[in-house]
Picture 1: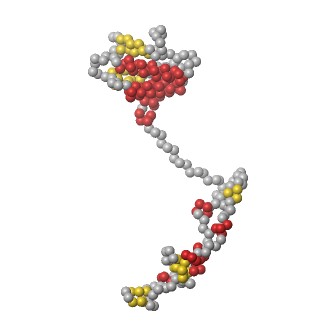
Picture 2: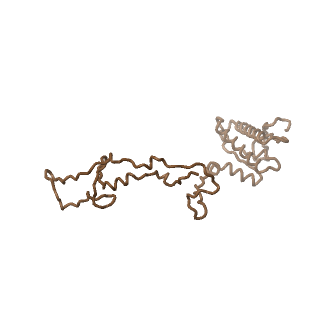
Picture 3: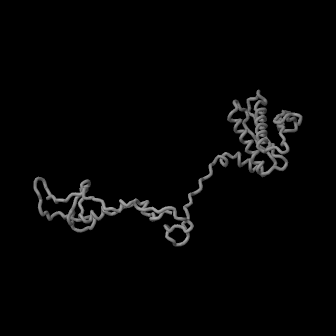
Length: 255
């Protein structure tokens, strides 16, 4: 039998003593010093030849074909890595054959072996639920805060000063906001065509400044929104320098 070339598949009758009608003999052996990647390619080619040969058996029968396929190519003392690679080659070859070949008559393929460790790996690679289920993403871990009660903005001693950040000088200058305001002249309340003066029925809420919550002193009105404030209150608010929230938490020094 070794006179035949590698990858050759021989067909013999199962005889009366075997529960098989046909026996396919695959000729495949490892070469001394052969790279595992090259051997796996030869293994895939051999398995493909076995499937091709089995698919044309008993063409007159309308029934599908069932084959029993032992794990070949493992060697006498296979390592776990060799077992996994051989299992992967067999799986890939069978899947490729079923997807690409027309009129496949093979209905069942039984993988058999006599080693428990090989059986476990076979189940791992041929169980569709275990093989195709994507692993769950790891939960995001919050960054651990630095130990101790040091201020969170205190730079580490191991860091060196890179540059100095200075505020824009223009931001410290008082801006002229008077152009956005006008003197508020209180208009008498009207009801129809009547001007209501000194109406005691309604509270004078419009005379209360929402900044100081006191009675208006020299009220001014913003031109756009028409809101009224004390001149001193609104001037103080608008003259303050505001920084974005991102920069408000930064130090003057950048590290």
